[in-house]
Structure formats: C-alpha cells, structure tokens
Image (cartoon, rainbow, N blue to C red; front, side, top):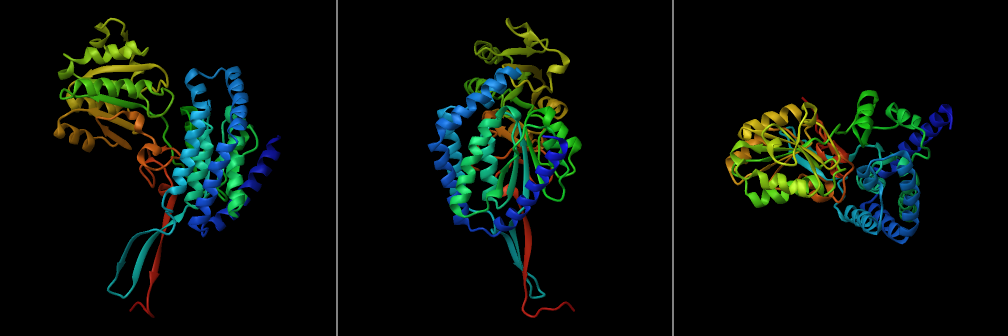
Amino acid sequence: MTDMDVRGVMAAMGEAARNAAAELAFATAESKRAALETAAEAVSARRAEIIAANAKDMEYGQAKGLSPAMLDRLKLDDARIDGIVAGLRSVADQDDPVGAVMAEWDMPSGLHIRRVRTPIGVIGVIYESRPNVTADAGALCLKSGNAVILRGGSESFHSSGAIHACLVEGLRAAGLPEAAVQLVPTRDRAAVGEMLTMTDHIDVIVPRGGKGLVGRVQAEARVPVFAHLEGICHVYLDGAADLEKARRIVVNAKTRRTGICGAAETLLVDRAFLDRHEAVIRDLLTAGVEVRGDATLAAIEGVTPAQDDDYGREFLDMIIAAKVVDGVDGAIAHIRSFGSNHTDAIVTEDDATADRFFQRLDSAILMRNASTQFADGGEFGMGAEIGIATGKLHARGPVGAEQLTSFKYLVDGNGTIRP
C-alpha cells in the first residue's frame, strides 16, 4: 500500500469504528455475552486453521531473527488455544460494567445524582508478537461497550487474522456491528503512525510490546495513551524472608516465562539474608539463568560480575541482575532509582517491613510472598487484560473491561430549580 492508501484505509476504519461505538454504547449485556461465547466456540472449532496460520508466522519470525523469548510469545499450540477460549468465556461471564452505578447521593436541593460507568468510545490497540492479544483486546473492548481497532505485529499477521475472523463471527451471530472489532489489514508501519494521530476517531491508544514500540507511541501519539514502557520487575529478599518461599518465588518469577512483562529482572538481597542467599542463587544457576551480581554476589562460583547498566534493564531472557542492599529501605531506594513502576515484590514474614515496602513504593502492582509472574489480568480475576498501565491517570495495573470505561453523571430532579 502507498501512504495515501494506508491513510484512506485507516480513515475509513476510524469512521466505521466511531459508528459502531455509538451502537455498542447501548448494546445489551446479553448480546455482548452471546458474541463472546460464539467467538470462543469459533476459536475452538477453528484451532487447526489458527495453528496453521501461526506456523506461517513462526516461520516469518524465525527468518526475521526474533529471539527465543519473542518466538515463545508468538507461538500458539493446543494449550494456548485453550487459554484463548477460556479467556473469551471468562470475559463473557463477567458482569457487564456499562451502566453500573459507581455512586449515588441526594443533595439538599432535591437533586438525586448517580455516577455510572460508560464506554470510552473507540480504543486503538497496537501490539507485537502475541496473537492472543487479538482475542483479549477484542473481548475486553466489546464487553466494555467500546469499538476497537487492532494493529497486530507484522510477525503475528496470519495468526491475528485467523483469531479476528472468529471475533467477527461472534459479532455477526449476535447482531452487533462487525466494525466493532477491526484488524488493520496491512503490515505497513505507516498504519501505526496514522492511528497515533486519529484524534477524531480514536479516544485512547493502548500499546502492548517492547520498549521501541511503546517509546514511539508515547513520543508520537496525539491520542491519550494507556501504557508501560518497560517491565523492570524486582524481587526483594528481606532478612525476615522464609528461605523455601524465597527459593520457589525467585525461580518462578524469573524462569516461568522470561519474555513477559511480569518476569523478574532484578533480585535484591537484604544483607541480613546473606547467610541463606546462596541457595537462591544456586537455584537460578541450576535453572540455566545467567546471574549478574554485584561484588558480593559475584564471589559465588558461576555468577557473572554485573555492569552498571545491568540494573534497570529489561532482559526478557534467562538473565537476572542481582545486588545486596541494606534492608528494606535500601531495596526501596534501588527500586525508586531503577524500577519502571510496573511490578515489584517483597519476600518477608515481617508485617511491618511488608507494610513499609507497600507504603513507600508507587509501582502499579506490589506483591508480598508471591511471584511477579502473577502480574496479569487473568490472574487478577479480570478474565484477560489489554495491558498493564503504569501511568497515574485513569487506569493503573492490569487494564480489564472495567478500566476501559469512563463515567457520566445522571441527575434527577422534580421541577427543581436553582435559587
């Protein structure tokens, strides 16, 4: 496509999305549920077709030189298809957020005021690699009464297209506008640039991908953005940590899936934990993790001396930076300097220390005695998520259907006038 073609296609998609959003704003909860249930059935029934499409994408990704972690994000198999189906059904089963009364009160003037949830309008989602985002984002936007324009990564082009077709089948069966969930039909990067400036058609952009993509979106967008730039997640082992809990949590936080934004990238060890820390480091080394430690930790056989730029770095790989700190305040100071306000965890049996960690850090997600890999909307009971937001306004943490709503005030009087 030429730039002019892309501009025309995107403008037409934006207009169609705006019209669809107007209808979705008053669509019944039953029709949205039916659309999602039918889409789930379609994904399950078409799994062979989706996996075949994914094989083309995997071949493309390998030729493009994607890292093993990125290829893992891209890959679909029966288990992951089952996960997509379960996610669609979970979102379908949730209460409809649209129209929910958030608060209501009476005024001395005689007015009765309600604040109720309402759709944002049109959401633009720009993502890389993970084709399941097509289903997650489409489902959450539909559930919250928003139209969505999806721009998947070039490497997931075929997989996203096959999943999108299932979402459209659901919309059609439920009698909802097919333009409610649209997928940009080109790999041309010019489409991203168009989306970022479509202020007449798109109400908010959600980027989901690496630092390059999110950085570009935050730098160039004229449309408001829900985003996190990096997932620089820390696990802090306090002096009052239980050793067996620490061993399980650290290995899981780093190795379960290294390519997701909730993977631990830095391990902080309280100096008071040093008499027990070596077992945790050995567990990581045995699991195949490259541990890049400060001078104290580098004395352990197998640990690589850390460089200054290893702290505050998102590896998305079997690598973790490690450092000894002086107590919880040392951990807090390090995280404030090097963290990305995504997800940080403390392992401790001391309630007061945990409270201090929770009170004095402002990450979107803070955890105690749990793996950072739980930083996921599905694990928060949201069915799925459209991304993790680390900004301070509107949405923070996992962005589910409820976070994709705004609100309006409904005011009732009885011939009431203002004196």
